[in-house]
Length: 305
Image (cartoon, rainbow, N blue to C red; front, top):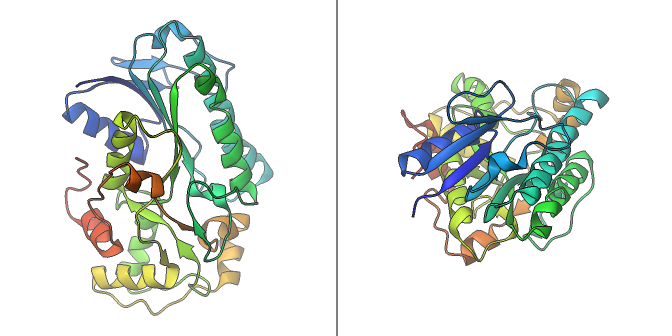
């Protein structure tokens, strides 16, 4: 059955791929945008207390992906506040409006991140695991809590805890490609930190699965079933690119370059499992890192189903 979905963050890496996937499948998509609205769009202010609830009446689903790019610059106190506000205040504004709608949607799929778990070493983590410590963990906890008005209104809410999303078009992988193609890639720090990742096409498929799988609510880890140590990640990437990976980046150099962000994004370790996705019958198109990297680097990709 076709649906009418509203998407925030539709110009981002995941949002743009999701909109393309939904429209290609015959679904009607309305974008929530901050600039003046054009055709098929509704303008909103994610920092406001809310907006016209009537503008969202009669829609079937909302996918909320909007938020400040956490890797856009060093984490100053002001930038960290922008990161938090763009997620927490924006989600509160959206969910208050959805709750006030005369005909609220059946489902809200709202972004979060595996940063919720903090730096946990080699501990196996699933959706029942507790929150960790640190700026990202605190932000994710508040971000998810901001969906409570929608839950209280009877909307099925799914919280997407995204891992590292692999795409040659953006994100961490895109930034790694140039040095690795030049033969200048290597492990980060000691390389033992666990990275939980997912290919962009599978991330889009997972969102669409969460929209229709009525059994899913609450946190859902959007990661592939095979997290790897950074040492293995860089080895596989170099092999896929047919380049060596002999130039490690010491932890002190990463911290000098990126400050606090280095410890929370690049040197942090979280072995996250997609238990909810697997138990609900989701099938990964690229379950191994080698498959996901090859898919990401293939010309013309991503092409989510």
